[in-house]
Length: 386
Ligand SMILES: Cc1cc2nc3c(=O)[nH]c(=O)nc-3n(C[C@H](O)[C@H](O)[C@H](O)COP(=O)(O)OP(=O)(O)OC[C@H]3O[C@@H](n4cnc5c(N)ncnc54)[C@H](O)[C@@H]3O)c2cc1C
Image (cartoon, rainbow, N blue to C red; front, side, top):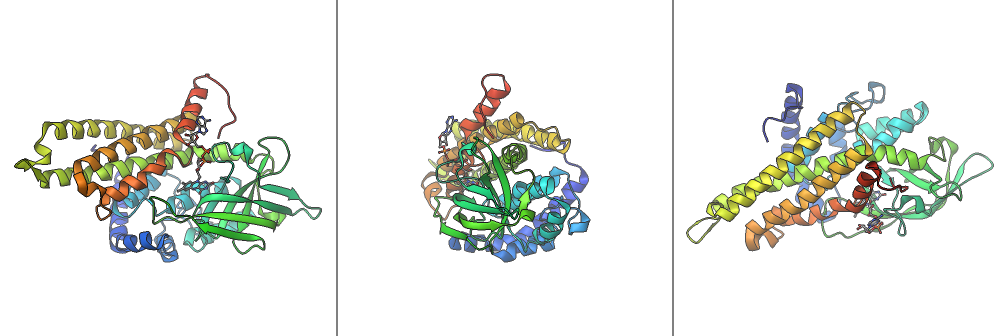
């Protein structure tokens, strides 16, 4: 879909420089990242040196002070297209970073933001537990306030992105008996009692490290409490809207990339004496996908504009995530079909994309949770959902 009307010339210029950087420095690393199961710390350091991490951070913390989400959108689109959706710098900058931006005290920002901007402190967020994912109000990890004002943290988390290479985690823990009474804590990987469990083996997103984390009587000093220790649930609900929009940006970019490479493939590959593209079925399915992608992209671009104006609702973010992740699944499945047997071979990018895409309908809130949130917005039920 060209042109995309919400971009200005400065976004196009930014895209050009991001493309040059990712092509030269990051794309050549992807196969190795996937083989080893995580990106190199060096990748974060290089991104930081270019100014691409936590671009929203103020200059006093080493950032660029760019709060316009369109720049993050461009960065994420090109990352997905030219490198790999498992390069989770967006989780660092736009999923976890905003908790610091919104909730951290000036002293906490001064301690943690410069390292995050430079890529020296890799960020992660630990909400999900073995027995609580969609139902975040049911988490069991406990934080008990101690007489000296510090907190004792006990519990286990799972499926945590950047869990192997991360240095600083925003950890959600119960701070009382009432359901949903949750606090958020800044836990650094060098704290006594913090440990990493298994580096989990996934069917896709092989460049991204996903791990278990454990907290055994971790003493979290009072100065590492993030915001009000009873309002964590509300904070998560606030931050999840932009997180879901980033997920939508990723899904639609991934689907667009799959579509583009399939367009090239079907013009080359021949059967029954003609290119696969020459069959009416191919043309119709490709045309359908073009229309579906354009419609979803317009909605995502609109949501980016709403987020820039602080007007992105939880319902719109949920709708964007739902629509794009389902589109991503459908489009990539059809693209695999057009690749024939090649589409099932690891050496073809489309096969890897197929496996990478599957999680989009589950993480950052499963499609069913998105439906619940949208339904709640219609006045059709009330649930304590994030
Ligand atoms: C690669 C990867 C990276 C991740 N990164 C992180 C991270 O960095 N930090 C983090 O905290 N978590 C992370 N997660 C966890 C992820 O957010 C959860 O897996 C997700 O929220 C679903 O939770 P669950 O796995 O416990 O599934 P469950 O909550 O057990 O749900 C299973 C299924 O049940 C159905 N379901 C659940 N509730 C409802 C309902 N109310 N109505 C209808 N159907 C329902 C849905 O089909 C759902 O998919 C990651 C997961 C993966 C796989």
